[in-house]
Image (cartoon, rainbow, N blue to C red; front, side, top):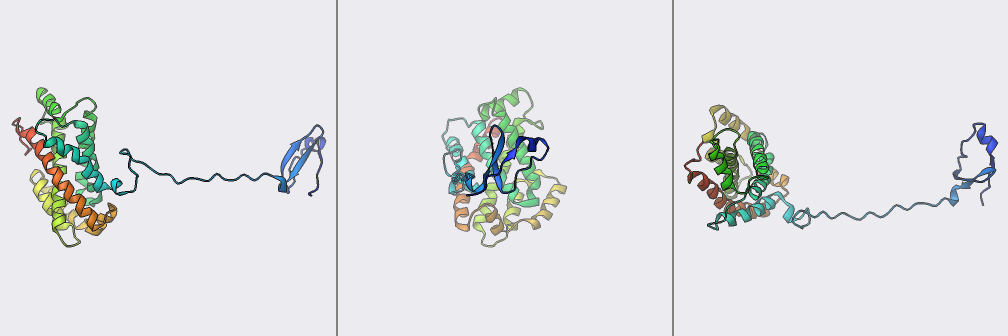
Amino acid sequence: MGKTLRVSNSHLEAGNSKKPANFAKVKQTNNFLVPLPIEQRKRRKKPKTKKKIIINSEGKMAGGREDKALRKIAASFEPLAEVATSGGVAMEVGPFSHACAHVSVLFGCLGIAFKFAEKDYVSKVDDLIEASKSITTLNDMIELDIQQDCARQGGSHTRNLLRVKRGVDMVRVLFEEIIKSDGNSLKDAASVAYEKVFAPHHGWAIRKAVAAGMYALPSKSQLLKRLNEDEGSAKVEMQSFVRISGPVIQYIEELFNSRQLGIDW
């Protein structure tokens, strides 16, 4: 048994209120304080922490195949492709803009060569997401801009839609080229995608800067690592996106061409 040390109130009042080193708690009585030995202190047990299981918005476990960037991109475009091929259902601004938001991850992984595209693409997608709060369909969105005579003006939803469509098309072509290539370099695939989609709409200075940036592209293996993919899984998801994004791109282009707006501006 540890010894009980008595400390009078007058002793505390004199200013010597420091607890003895070998005592953890002090019990108050009428005339004096009785410190309790450390041996009698109740040790608090730390509660066992359970491993958190994160579930995404679709009810699937985060970190699995469903949570990977390429799977998200392909999965988000699947319902859009169904609408595009339905022959009558109007595509809504909300699902389209949120699906396109997943694509921005790809531009971020490509480095400085496509930094301009990432910044421009993200700002245009954000505008469409904001527009979806008050406009239901892409068709209605374009019609409103036409009525207000601002469809071709900078900053209009219609102009931003055309820019976003090009971004999606560029990724589609990039995936096509990556699937066909056998090497570890992305330079040829990215160059073809840029020349087909973006270059016709860029001035000399931008084209020159992009050409220089191509030498700073990550390798294919580095890109797949950033996307948490291996060669096999990446090929499956890229093929899926190429297949389902085609009808969506054609649907958007038809919205412009059917109104004599064209798509080369």
